[in-house]
Amino acid sequence: MKRLWRVHGKANEGMTALEKELEELRLKPAGSELAAALNKLAYHYLHSNPDRSEACALEAKDLAKKLGLLTDMAKSCSLLGSINHQSGNYEEAMLYSRKSMRIYEELEDKNGIASTLSVMARIYWSQGMIDKALEHYHGSLRGKQECGAGKDELALCHLNLGACYSGLLRLDLALSSYAFAEKILEESGDRKKLAYLYNNIGSVYGKRGELDKAREYFQKALEIRENLEDKNGIASTLSNLGSLQEDLGNNESALSFFIRSLELFEEMGNKRLVAYTCGSAGGVCTRLGLLDKAEELITRGLEITRKLELKDWEILCLKNIANLYETKGDLRKALMHSRELNTCMEKHLNEKSMDKIAGLQVQFETEKKEKEAEIYRLKNVELLKMNDQLREAFVHVRTLQGMLPICANCKKVRDDDGYWQQIESYISEHSDAKITHGICPECMIKLYGKGATHG
Image (tube, rainbow, N blue to C red):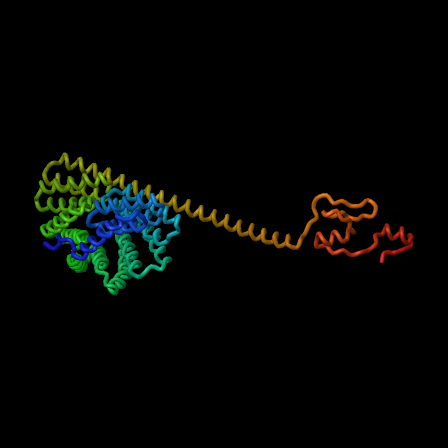
């Protein structure tokens, strides 16, 4: 297993080239190329060196802000969201993600919006808000489809949707989403994503109780990840194999997998998964009679879950520590932690209910605003239509305005240039009216007498 601890050769060469490019750009006046290089380096260091990744992303953000480079700033904020998510700083992660979203919306960058929705979905997922994660992943998929994203990107979207369905125990939908992704990834040969997919399919079969199929997919995932020397992926699959062995009652094998997984998560600074693995490994230690080791692991996991507010895994740790003290015969502590467990479960259920209510309220308000906007739009359409009709009418109408000097005797009209002209000529020139002549009844009598008739 020594090769697991070595940095992948090609990846290391890529990092060196990026670092060299960065140093060369630092010799020139700071501009968009430097900001882009910093973001690129931050992305490459995301899983292997979170501290370096954060330093690059922060520098890129500050530079982009100074130079007014909105796209680069949005990218750096999105990266900072991912970095903080990975280290368990969910509030900070969401703040950066929302800032990124606002910039992308201002730029009307659909692809950027879709990518940021995916980051936000991962943050919700890690906090146990799977419904919200599913909603954001669906939004990301729609955005990618509108942008004409390639098959590989769409496969990743379906991978994420499958993970949400699996978390909600909608297992048939999970396998359906994974089947869509599997066909694409096997054709494209993207082994890293394929390993992720196999790992997730194994989890679904584990939940369905089909443990042989689960182990088959976990082993396929582990083999690829070991060949790629993907530490994060290896740790995840080892943890899954530990859970599988635990379900089979093979506690010694389960503990071995959990400990190997824990070492990798600790090396990468992934506190969230360190907490989960400590709780799981501690539970196995209790069954093996390694009670001091169990207490050490579960206590550590409990501290991290409370610090990061990981309610689902806090419940796991509380169950295991209550069971540990009962096994040790310390019934006072067992009872204390059992009460904490009940309180935590009740609070967690209430929070989930409140989140659901809040989500429904947001949905109602959104739909209400959309309907109001549609009514406003239709009113504007009608108003524009009426304005067009009026404009069209005005084209055919010319009006005479202001004071009109007219001779009291001959009835000629004085125009703007001071010339006197017949009233018929003036009206014809200043309007669209056509003049015709006739004799009114009163004039008819004056001219022709009372017996005359109007012809």
